[in-house]
Image (cartoon, rainbow, N blue to C red; front, side, top):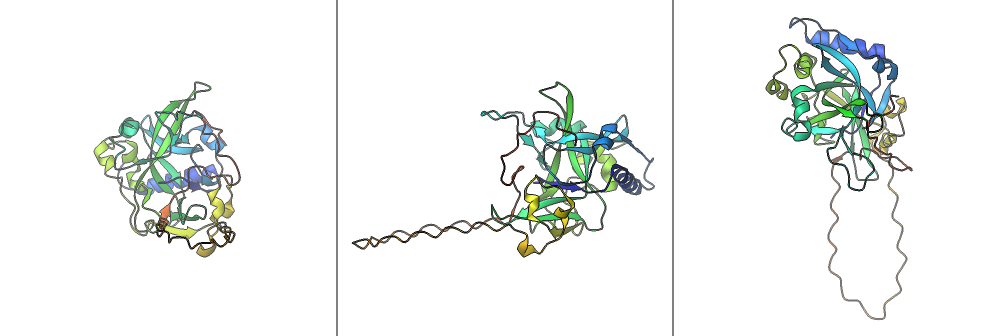
Length: 307
């Protein structure tokens, strides 16, 4: 699962230049060069982000009129069925690569609406609930990650306008991520981007599906970072500073000592031994929203603020 990621490049011009350079290098000698058309909304909304969570508006790369286009989209497909208790639809931030092509929720998008989500890292967690330690995975050689995604149009229930929404495809963890979590986002090689987008000779869904595999060993570097990442309220460069692994977890509250019991007049019959508590799992991901000291935010039903 991938519930948080980063795109900390300083400005939109840098992002566009890095994307074009990587894709141009990936296609060297293999076909015509394609530039990236830019939706003005994307450039206007862009700022460095260090803790991107579902419901955030983010730039995604898709095919439009036979060309690559950077457009704004909101992270999270709207679930087909809404919670019975109300409160708006839930968000589907991820789709499993092994089944997305056949699942009714993602089938149409897989066939015709595949996208690439630019990022420069993503987070996963270890440790028990209440004391989880975040790790930031990022390209071992620097630069961008190209996350495989799907997008869909969705109607804003308040305004009636169409909004684009995206979900990230996940696969089995590679050797870099496996010590922390058993899943990771699908990372696309620059040479495979046009195939994934369905450009040129890349419309074949079978060939696109073959790209959904774990990244090679050594593609990612890992860094223990601040537990401030655990709250979506925090979004600043200090989140990416490396810290010692033993201090990466917030301290869990110590249990209160039980008051001593009065001596019973008669010896109590020995009780059966209590079952042992299950050991916490090595890997895990925080809930999509985990605000420290605050209420869980309402998931918007349509377009979110483009900040």
